[in-house]
Length: 150
Image 1: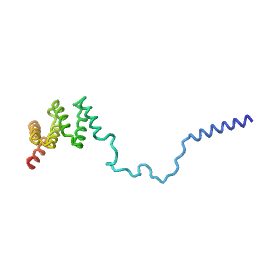
Image 2: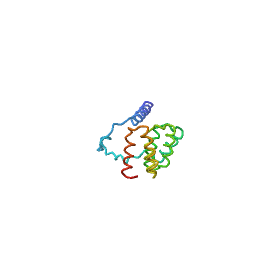
Image 3: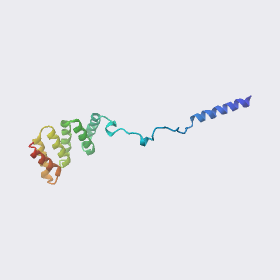
């Protein structure tokens, strides 16, 4: 009888181990993951909503205004959310430390136009062209402002 109990215990251990083993995948009518229909990019949810990401970048820039990567992302989201007054302040802070950064000064001019200050935008564009006459983006924006009589 003792042998019978030992056999039952061994069988139970074997059954328990077998149930924990990885079972082979059963055939499925679903296509492999690569072939499944993917949502269009617009429907893919972002990691953080833009306003939250903007606040994170704002804290990052408050700690280090020289972080150009953070500033560029901040500007992109700021334009998307139409937070022109807020991004103007951060661009001015950056330009105070880096007065010859023409791309940021050009972005400031675009922001000033959107804020309804074309006169100040022209001043910024002329400042760029006085230091770097070959900066095409500034020249083109100034030309467009003249044509549109802004």
